[in-house]
Every structure is written in structure tokens, then in C-alpha cells.
Picture 1 (tube, rainbow, N blue to C red):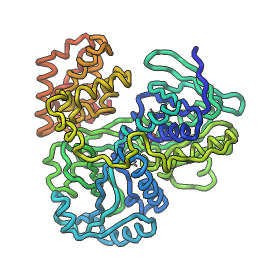
Picture 2 (cartoon, rainbow, N blue to C red):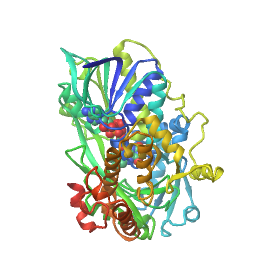
Picture 3 (tube, rainbow, N blue to C red):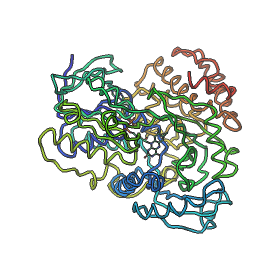
Picture 4 (tube, helix red, strand yellow):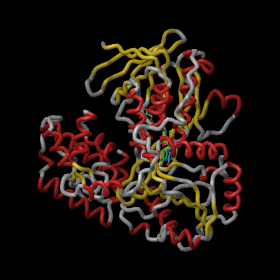
Length: 540
Ligand SMILES: Cc1cc2nc3c(=O)[nH]c(=O)nc-3n(C[C@H](O)[C@H](O)[C@H](O)COP(=O)(O)OP(=O)(O)OC[C@H]3O[C@@H](n4cnc5c(N)ncnc54)[C@H](O)[C@@H]3O)c2cc1C
């Protein structure tokens, strides 16, 4: 069995784990990061897209609000290229308690969240689809953040400093010698091999799965209460500003415009399983109804797809035994040396995507403390690769690039303007044979046709580059279609239903995907189906 040795082993390749790898590498530590799947395929890749200003927490949880605005300001500097500066509105609709707005203003003042009241008419001028019945409007520095870009920038930055980044490596056991953790046993799921990793310190950054990894180390009582939420992406930028209802945060009260879509969310239901991807039809309807309150006609717009993420809510059983604390949405750093008498092991979980940098900083501070070394954190000032210019992402950048070379660049994905050269470069660079991994890198297949036109081209190009055999290309194509289908089924109505019928003709009528060597698609997977049955199917 292969044995790798490192100073710091990071388990979990979401924003937090990638942030830990980046921070530790910047401090000159040798790092290995492993994830059981691709990077950002856990909660980070399934979130709402909001870089919080803190406005949502100013009344309910002021410390969280302050943390968000501090990190918002830092990330705007160091991860500029991953952020689109949409700005945000909090608006009072007829369904909201009008008194909340005054408390909101005071909360913003107390938590240092920049907030400016503007006339409702001005908000309407800037966002003409907003409900004309809004009575008050406030501007805050909300934004959107492209998590895949951010996580891969963190990983590449760490790699450039010598870190080894190992997606598709699942931790199956933790190496423990007496009261000391000294690494992990890892399964390379693509190669089907086990490897041993020896580490001086191990960081558990497994989010909603953190309790399971802690249990592998023989540490009980790390209580992560997974909370499932769904989001619905609409086909257009119905708004270009993040729009929140000015009320105590609740289900479906925020629309985030990100890239070519706008996303409404989210729900909040306890689940026992962090892998729970259930999409109850009632929750989809609830999101669409709530969308109507902010943007009348929301239900008539085309819904593109639905997905689920699971929040890592942390409740420290040890603390609550004595302190009866409520479940918190703040993050938690567990130094298991102090908490459980187990040395060289740290858990960092909970929190928000917006606070990943701070979480990583605190985790690496603890690592340095365990190593007995003083190495200052520099992630507050060091830009991520690609963000050195300090310029934010602008919607329309891709179109601008395409228009600059109209005839040269062959487009593979028309919806997301992905040129062939970009696709080939990503296939070669990642070495991935999984079209869904490529999707996360390039947004391939994320537009209205959900891969209808681009994905068979991409599979063919992969095969042409000898990345995949014909059978593997077929299997990869089918896996992609099945994954997309899961998200489309619950919103099959109107134009999206017509689109999926069209896709069905492409894949069944032209490509006969039922008879590809990679295996037949299950009945109804590229066809119109009764949305009422979708919840059951998605839940299965
Ligand atoms: C519905 C929803 C909407 C949200 N919206 C927002 C938002 O708009 N803005 C915001 O700031 N925050 C938002 N959040 C919160 C935010 O998404 C999370 O707090 C954050 O993504 C957690 O990141 P993480 O890296 O800690 O966890 P994850 O991203 O879940 O990373 C944990 C990783 O551990 C890996 N792992 C698990 N077990 C193993 C193992 N045995 N071996 C190896 N790897 C393993 C998983 O594959 C996963 O990649 C939202 C959360 C939800 C659920």
C-alpha cells in the first residue's frame, strides 16, 4: 500500500477545507487535501450563491452579521474575480411587519453593516420587476460568489505552493495511536486502491459529515445536525440585485442573481442524513409562491432546475450538557486535544460560505499551535490566483470574449458560451473523465437546455482526445443526463417541459441513448413526466 507523508492532512474539499489548504500552504506548511468526491461537491457546491452583507442577521444574530460584513469586505479584495458586485436590497412587502424595518436599520448600525434607505420608487427604477407594492427599500453590500471558481482558485493556489489536492479520495479510517491522531486511511475511489496518509496534524473540514469523520477517530459527541434546504434556479436574471424581504429570515425570502440565472431559496428542514437530496414538491411550490411576493409573475417565468443542500448546523453535545446552548449557525472550531484529550486533530464545521476564510484561519492557527510553531496568517491580504487585479467578475464577460473572436472560437455550449478550446484545456488539465466535474469548472450544460446541445459534443470531444473509450464516453454522457434530470423533473412545466421534450428527441430520436453500450436510461429520464411524481422519484 502506498504511504504519503505530510505535515497537515485536510479532510474535506469544500470551501472550508480548500480554505484551510490555501491558508496552511501560505504559511509554508506541507499539505494534503482529500475529498471523497470532486472539490465543492458537498454543501459548498449546493448553496444559494450569496456573499452575505450580514443584513439577514442584524436583528436575529448580530455577531454573525458582524462576521459576515467583515469577511464580505475581505473577500471582495482577495477573491475579487469570484465575486459579482450586484449589491443587495432589503424591501418591505405587504406581507412583512412594517416595524421590522426600523429594527433592521438599527441592527445594521450596531453591526457595522453599510445600509442606506432609498425611496421605493428608486428601487423600482433599478429593479423594474420588483413588487410595486413595496413600501421601504434599503441598499446593502450583498453580492454573489462563484463557489466553484473560488474553491478551485484556493486549491490551485495551494498546489502552486506544493500542496497535494486529491479529489475522489475518501477517508475510510483515522489512524490513531493512543491519544494521538497521526493521519488517515484513504480510498482512491477512481483507482480502487487504498492509501495511508501519515500527518502531523489532521483537520476535519467535513461540514455536515464532520461528526462521521470524528467518529472514525473514536470521538463521539460531535453533534452536527444536518438541515436540508432547496433552491430553485429561474432561467433569467429576473433581478440583477440580490433582493431580500425586510423581515426575520424565513423560507423563500431572497432571490440571488448569479451568472445567467436568479435563484430563490431556501427551505430549512432537519434531516438525519447529510446526503439527503430530497426535493418535496410542496417545497418547490412554496418557493415559487414566495417568489411571487417579491417579483409578481415569478411563477410565469421559466424555472430551470431545483437542488438541495444540507447545512452543517453544529450543536456541541459536551457544551450543551452544561450550558444548555441552542443550536447555533455560527461556526465551531473543536481542538480535540482540549475537548477530548486527543492530540493532533481539529474539527472545523458549521458557519457559512461567506465565513470560510475566517474558519480556515482559526483552524490553521490551531494547527500551528499543535505543531508548536508561530506562523502568521496572510489570507486577509493575499489575493487568490486570478484575483490579483482586484477586479470583480462582470456579467457579460464571456460574451465580450466571444465577440472579440467571433469566427475563431467554436462554441460547444451556446447557453454558457463555452468555447471548444476551453473545454479541451479543462479536460486535459483536470484529467477528469466525468462530464459533471467539467460542468462545475466551466458551467457546461447549466443553461436552459441543461446539456441538450452541448453534452454529446463534449462527450465526443473527450473521446477524440483519448480521455475516454467509446463505452466510457457513453457512460459519462448518461451519468450527466441522469444528474441533470434529477434537478429538472420537479419543475417540469411550461417552456422547460417543452425544452425537455426537445432534448428527449435529441437523445432518444437522434442518438438512441437507450441502446448505448454505457447502459440504458431509466424510463422517463429524458422525457416529460408528471411533476407530481417527481418528488417521489427525487426522494428515491
Ligand atoms: C440550502 C443552503 C443554502 C446556503 N446558502 C448560503 C449562502 O447563500 N451564502 C453562504 O454564505 N452560505 C450559505 N450556505 C451555507 C454554506 O453553503 C455552508 O456553510 C458551506 O458551504 C460549508 O462548507 P464546508 O466546506 O464546511 O462544507 P462542504 O462544502 O459540505 O464540504 C465538506 C466536504 O467533506 C467531504 N467529505 C465528507 N465525508 C468525507 C470523507 N469520509 N472523506 C473525504 N471527504 C469527505 C464532502 O464530500 C464535502 O465536499 C447555505 C447552505 C445551504 C444548505
